[in-house]
Length: 432
Image 1: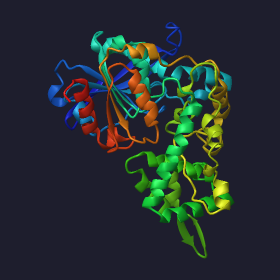
Image 2: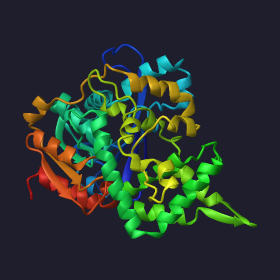
Image 3: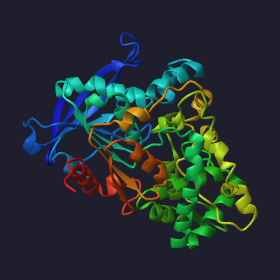
């Protein structure tokens, strides 16, 4: 262990070894990384533990400086573990480089089935006794981290002292098709709201898409920028300031070079930073697998369901006079052609999309008899997680208390972190 200080906190880097497959505890092992954070003034206190599960899938835990965002509120009461979930950050990362060593696509896909919420929760239970001495701990799950927390409540509630979920109450039994069938109208509302705020962006977006359709530029890292890839910049619209970010991105798309216009270097770099999966490839590879339950494959659900919403087709929009609709939070087969970080994983992704023996993730009967205090922030018209699905799940989990708000978007834990977490803590403690 290595300990060091940042403003107001003491950090300790911790490493753990757990089985790749928890049903085979003597088999291959993987290393997990977690960063302990405690208030400097309380470093010697016997504080209860809170483990933070990041959104995703595929993202390591956020790297804070000092007591930033919600962390400042958390360290008032807890000793916090920022866990890099398996396959992310410094926890045995999975990407085109490391997966190549596993063998062919069949071997890679078989390996990656061990990187869903069920394995992440079993990791947490393996780690917990080493830190708490066996006592239950608190969990804060953001987005996909909330999916993991819901699985935790279904599978190992004895390990939980209390649970806080932000923007991450999943549908308990919905197929991936149901998730995306609810998502596309929601995404369209976000795009329409953006164009209402910035009507000049209607023309800009169409101009950029038309340029891409004609020229198919390749970005500096080898990313092929197609109209469909450009549309996926709509992922920004799920954040509190995302509409403004998208507007500023679009306004600087072109630079005049003599008597013609080209995509500016600044635009290309900014697009690359938003669209590339190099830093979080599991987000793309496992994105639909997080919904897999039972014998029906996910089968590229976002791509198939998109066909039910022809207004999202870029070619159709450009052929007529309709505004170009952005997308977001959807993964398509073309991602594995456009992005060099994903190209070697195309066949692996195909095998995962076709898989028809996913294990169950949630136990509705057990959740209906839940005894763990739970509070969840649900963001009105959240672009990433359907509000109605979340409310239905909230009604299933016995004793769960909700904080439903339109003050924040999906990134409310970042934008309004102390306020959101403080409200959830108060709900769990029955102070409101």
